[in-house]
Image (tube, rainbow, N blue to C red; front, side, top):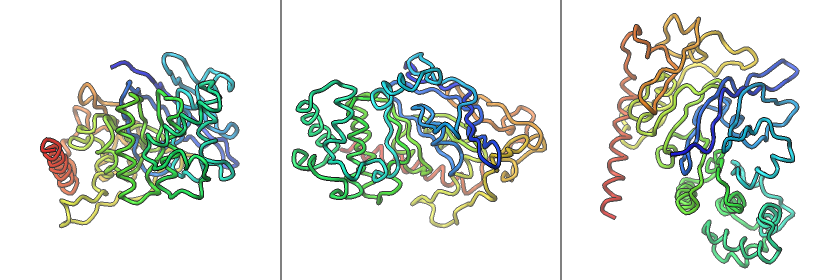
Length: 354
């Protein structure tokens, strides 16, 4: 498949009173047409900063892209002027944010908020934009869309507001949809509906999705590939199967071990010890070493390169070096890997029956 987006050696910093916060440190990845890439990691790992940079939404000052390229259809977005970005933002690259109430204008009717982008980017008349707004609300599963376009955000439930935000993001048929933890504030039932809605919409529109989350359960259901971020870097990237059933980085092991599954009720959750590093002063060597029970001496001195596990799977850990000891994931993590395999197998069988 052809790449629609390529991020190369991206570095993003924020200038604060305390000094330079190195939020993103050399991130590289690509996104293919029609693909869903999930970016996972703890809070502060650089997920949202990375993806906001794609739409040039980093406030400057204090934020700045120090280095790197963001190639969208071969065009480097870091070199474009703001007016040029305005023609891309919302039209070719759209974002769904975590809290719909901070994304929606409480003083504007829902219909007008959807129509805004259609009039600006699609050059539609007001009547055309209104008709399209009704169609979009119907697409995202809101009942009585023709009546509801005249209502205000406070007249919608949390799940309905998130559907409205998705409708706004989809209004101009974007080529890339960035979903920044879009289901975190929703209950489990509504979360499942929103995820199913996004998968269905992707099939219809053939858009590419970057899905940011800290919930690995969500990742297993929506993503084609997964990038694991820690301390402003991607430490492992691969297909969903590779990350869930053959993880190589100890941080990925920690994330899997800290996630409960229905099949593993006989053991306690495994917590990752310590806290993420202070990005004002990133540590020498591997940033995860102080929290890694499997850290080698070299981890304290040298940052590991990306080792290739397969054509699609890479991980930045010295444990993959040919001279490193053979260390396997902890037993609790292996049980969860087995549990995920059984869950996926069960879903596949249910799909075949239906």
